[in-house]
Image 1 (cartoon, rainbow, N blue to C red):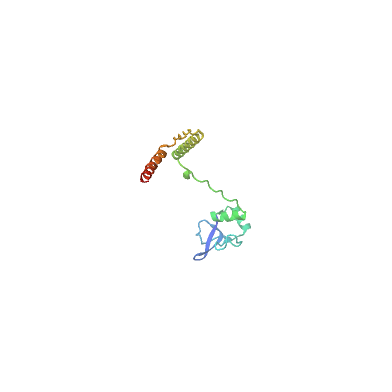
Image 2 (tube, rainbow, N blue to C red; image 1 turned 120 degrees about the vertical axis):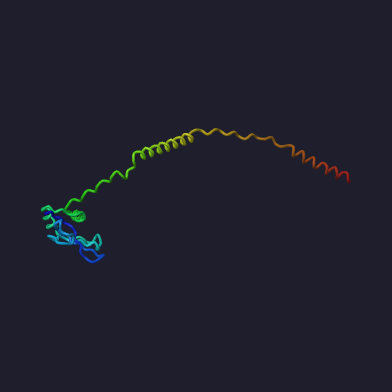
Amino acid sequence: MSIKIRLSRGGAKKRPYYRIVVADTRSPRDGRYIERVGTYNPMLAKDDAARVTLVEDRIKHWLGEGAKPSDRVHRFLAGAGIMEARAIPTQTKKDKPKPRTLERLKEREEKAKAKLEEAAAAAAAPAPAEEAPAEEAPAEAPVEEAKAEEAPAAEAAEEKA
């Protein structure tokens, strides 16, 4: 006869309440059980002491008899310090990039490094000196034109007098 320590549901609709029971694996979930060894009320706050109650000496007795706890009950027992917590399984390799993708990423990184090196080399190289603009000779022609314009006005004034 195979024995399990598991949850048996009670309570009303949408208001669950569980008994932690020792039962034969062939019996139904809420059916016949051998012994009740605790309770679990998920409606209470997580830090509430009455959320999970366990009868530790009877649980240790049944574990010694070979009873296997269900996953949820195993977590309760680990939280109470009765059993070791189960190891968290490692993630599969499906979330890792494939080899071809890794090659492409490596190529992109190399190209980016090459561009940064080129930019650094261009910034470090001295810029070619720009030629200074040549100074232009002062424009003398407009001054002469101004004098020429004044001359006819002066000659006309002399003619009238």
